[in-house]
Length: 140
Image (tube, rainbow, N blue to C red; front, side, top):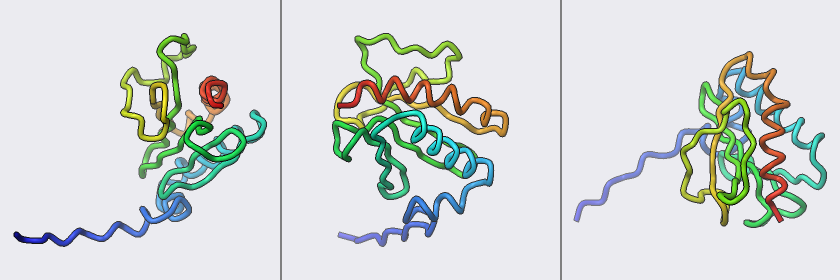
């Protein structure tokens, strides 16, 4: 049996802080602005880096209290939120993708994503916080 050597992780994958420095300036700015907006708009928010992701929790960090996660690529800010199939999700601008992810961050409900990637998306930060608030209300 041949053992293959795994490639080491790129340096920017090793922490949220390193990833934030590696991405484009617009993406880094949107991520820090969105984090600030979330903390200012919602009470009892705790943030914790989880590897190369930034997770948002209601009160204390655990699998049931997580309500949002930021994922970064060089050119995009992706936001994962929790939705529930039986609760109507309000997204008049259709920013949230229809695709549902396999519970990577959330232990219950559906996991969905929206992307901010243009400098004009900075104006949509307030709208993004409104979407995140719906997920916040589902967290326990």
